[in-house]
Image (cartoon, rainbow, N blue to C red; front, side, top):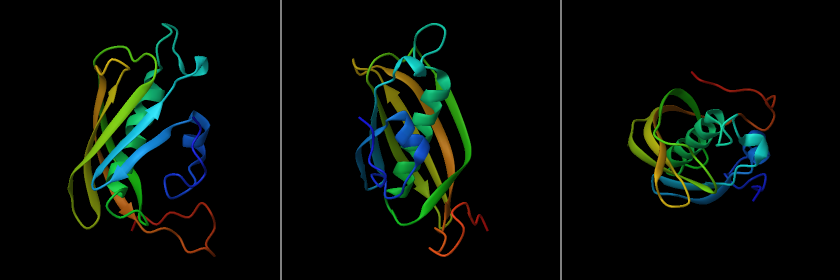
Length: 143
């Protein structure tokens, strides 16, 4: 279920490493799938909260970018609530709630295979221009 390097419009090495699959990214909404492996579990053998927060972060960022795919986003703030253990194939659904010229206000929910909500987050993202091809790869302008 590993994503291709440009599935999200850009290469995101960490997302590729985790194996998130992009299902939908359009009109202020997103959907991702994630089948956690043993290495993604905590000591209770359920999906680790850090993996869930990453899924929520990427789900919300993808919803924010879905209205202007050539523009990048960086996470400014994120609040997460865990409602129940996340097990099995997980689905992250994101929604762009409001945007300004430079900011996106989003929410995302992770559902288990039975469609039960496991975790929910709200997030604020800043829209950023992608660096010119001649710029160093790690250049991010947040001005």
